[in-house]
Amino acid sequence: MDLESIKPDQTLDAKGLSCPMPLLRTKKAVSSIKSGQILEVLGTDPGSKNDLPGWCERSGHTCMGIIDDVGFFRIYIMKG
Figure 1 (cartoon, rainbow, N blue to C red):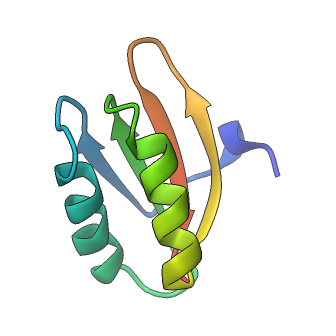
Figure 2 (figure 1 turned 30 degrees about the vertical axis):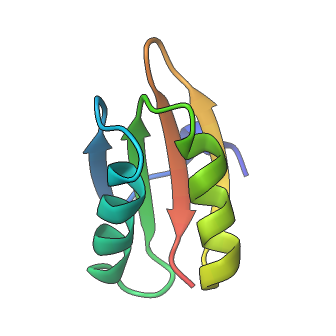
């Protein structure tokens, strides 16, 4: 699937936040969407690129991928 064509059901702006806040906010946001829906996380903390996919794996969610944008990145998570 082309990540650029994903239409997220919800977007979480975690830009400017540092560990552990992006992960904590992502957990809360994922809990508010339905199974199969997609959360887009916008972030600037480099650690999130490892933390969020690892958390998805442990929690039964799918990290669909990461897109590097200008000055931030986008992580797409499908709720399991």
